[in-house]
Image (cartoon, rainbow, N blue to C red; front, side, top):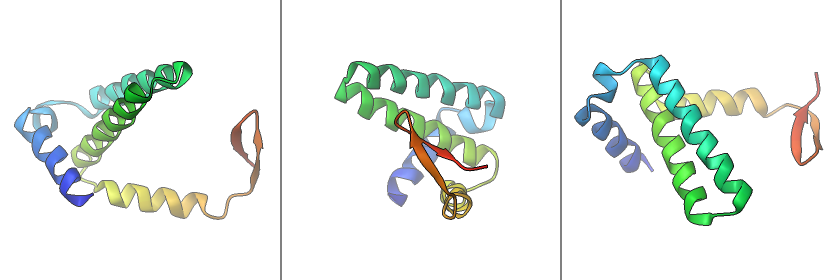
Length: 98
């Protein structure tokens, strides 16, 4: 996994995304890719689902790099936040207790 992450970051530098792009534009790109994933899920297009997950991950890895973070740090932080959450599944989605 680390090799793939490093290759994505290198690609981001090679394309000028990390140095010339903005974090706001990168966040917009993440939303665009996540929406494409949602569309693929709706029609159960497995190749597009795989592509959507991968493309969304790429945008998040680049966003982390642009913010001087490591994607692993972000994932670890999120896991720490959600581990103790209580909630229930409503309409197929986990809803945390307030």
